Length: 377
Image: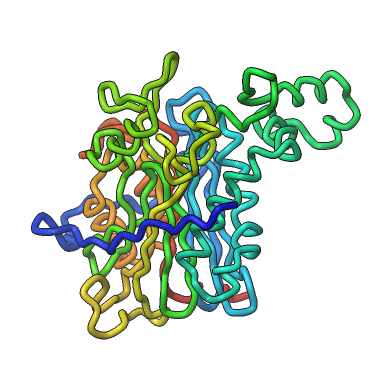
């Protein structure tokens, strides 16, 4: 695999429109999760933590016919205390998102840059490793099983299922497997010591909550971005109505994992119209609840300081600042990360709330830089 450098972006504050947490924000205290599940069909609400982190996840199919989101939480990637968090927003199928969630950790551990202590570059290499793996015949059957919900045992024991798996995905004129037709946006954050490093493709986001202020660690990769459009056109595709267009399909994002139909065998990864090469960023944080001194991006982290990773089902309805304000108030009022993020997702699903109601899958992962409280017996 060619060594492609990630494209670094600086963490960005919310600018002159930033708003700090306000007590008049309507933060729901969620106490009956079964009622919420019956109302909005939550697929997953999970929580956990250790001496460094306290996290919660809310993930729902919403009004979509299928659930195509996936997530990753690993609080101990290595013996250096590295933690890994990710959200993966699939399209045209769930399999690429699920595959990435399952294989990103292993790809990171196998990265030479990661082994050398270069986390940003290591994350970028992990993205490209996963992208390359999905083009291998060994991944073809696994992707098919993920799409269809089939166990490996059923695949091995049923010749008809195996034959269907062997016809999965994009093929070239000679019938050779090229990779999955499905794709995924991905935002992945690795926290080690006093640094959080992020890599992302697509329109999922990773946002830092800094004492009520939103600090964007990612930017959306959309076909409305002039710089992204230049690469699309150079690769021989066109942009029509802010979508990357082929003869029979179109895509709103300009970077993703998978989506083989938008990628050409004769082009390197960084020149593809829809490239898997991520943008990366790093921000300093203090795991005890403060920021590294003298930094412009992250200052004076307090009780409500956290990392939020979420798919566009949330961001289509809320700005970065609105989400951070909501969560800051919720955490300051004593909600756990689990209850706070569940209330946030409930807010964008509620047609009677102050935000537009989401019609998409919604997955949000909230990571607080604080120890999870011990549960007394």
